[in-house]
Every structure is written in C-alpha cells, then in structure tokens.
Length: 249
Image (cartoon, rainbow, N blue to C red; front, side):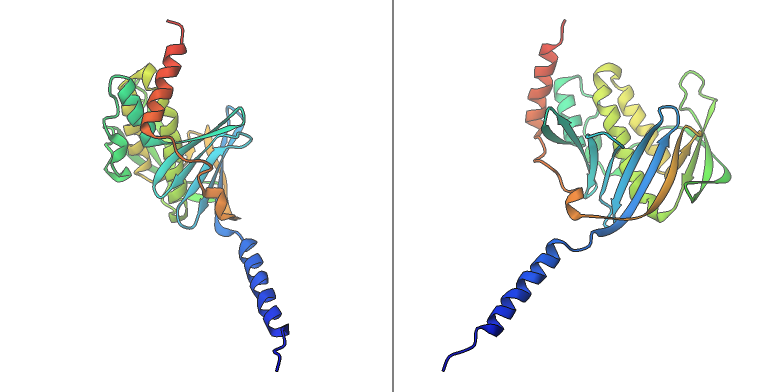
C-alpha cells in the first residue's frame, strides 16, 4: 500500500505560506512625532515602538539616534561606512582622552541623573500638535541673564514619554562631543536638560521648536535594530586620539 503524497505536500505548502506571512507580517504599531525647527526650517522625526524603543533624526539626514532598552546609540553614516556608538561609551572615552568631565554620569538611570538648580514656575495650559500641555516658565537657563524666563510647553501625555526620552538622548548626544570645547559646562547642560525633561515631554519651546503632529504609525521591527556592532570604549579612545593628532597645533 502506498501513501498519497498530496497531504504531505499540502503541509509543506502551508508551512511555506506561514513562513512567508511571518516574514511579511504587518509592521508593529507605534507612534510617529514630527517636530519643526522654525528658524532652520528643518523637521525632526521621532518614531516609537510600543515597547518604548525609538529612532530619531532630522528628516533628510542619514545620521540618526536609536533608543533601545533605555540606552541611546548614535548611528553615523560617512563615505558608505556605518558606525554605531553608545552615548555612555562616547562619554567614557571622552573622559579617558580629556580631563574627565562626565565621570560615569551616563552609567546612572535617567531618573537618577543630577538636575540643575533652575527656577520652575508652572503657567497656563497650551496645545501643540494636537497634544495638551502646560507652559513652564524656567529661569536660570540664560547664564548672562539668569532672571530671564524661558517658556516650555510640556506635555504629561503617556504616549509621548518615549518621544521625550528619545529627544533627551538626542540632545545629550549633541552636547557630549562638545566637551573638548566647553569642558564642565557640558555636564551642566545635561543637568539642565534633565531638569526640563523631568517635567514631561516638551512640545513647544518658545515657538521656535514645536511639535507639529504625533500620530499612530507602524514600522518594521528591523527599523529599530542597530545596523552595526557598537564600537567599544577602547576603539573610541583610539579614534579620538587619532583625530586629535591630525589637528594642526
């Protein structure tokens, strides 16, 4: 007696269909937030997965940041080469090359990071990009005129929490490389940023940087994966020393 191969073929076909469906399954749900830099006529896009991982970068730029498992990574594309560095590793390498500034700052959890002694006064309610918030008048950011308030419209919307985390990491990633020029002030700027973001997610900064829209979106999982292995602290130190050696004295 011979067994028909038709049922076996159907099982194989079903397996192939399921595998294909898995490979091309609908993208995971998330949120896309677009901020507008009014002065520079640029847009900043922040894409967030439901698990809180995020991708952030200027629209049109190949460089971007990734927030994965609470760690912020910098992704740089130059000359067809992709390099990835974790922000806390960049800070640690900077402290080995220069007079230490950060001293393990990024080893702490975000909530445990030091805050700046700013004066924060809650103000009126407001709205930006379809999200409600409250204006906070913050004094002490202008070091020349410390009594001059800066206005931040800040939202406590739960949906925007990972957006705020990605935005804070992005801002810190711009400050850390400036340590050779501004020294200890880099740590002060990071503390000021922590003070502001501890209030919630900024959605309008004095009308100059403003949330335009925040809406549901879907992304493939690979969109939030590291495109290359992150550089070690040791390799970052070597790269920094090589770059410094090439600079004219």
